[in-house]
Image (cartoon, rainbow, N blue to C red; front, side, top):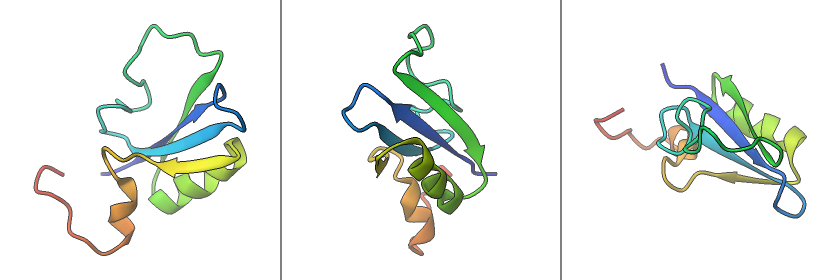
Amino acid sequence: MLTFHIYVNRSVPGTLARVHLSHCVYCNDGHGIHPRALRRASHWYGPFATFAQAYDAARQFARYRTKCQHCRPHRLTDGKPLPSEF
């Protein structure tokens, strides 16, 4: 089952929240790519069952919301088929 996570980066002015597919290499099921990194300026939230839930929740965490350009979680809602690896 596909799930989604939100990465919140507070070191960006205004705070940035980025939605990822949980299996994205940058998300790693909400652990990120730097497991020993200090969590003062960043945090992972999730999992969320749908992209819409994650994107709406991201509004509560940050002023700016984006979608990961690597895993492109928003494509699940635009009617395009998923690659065979998913």
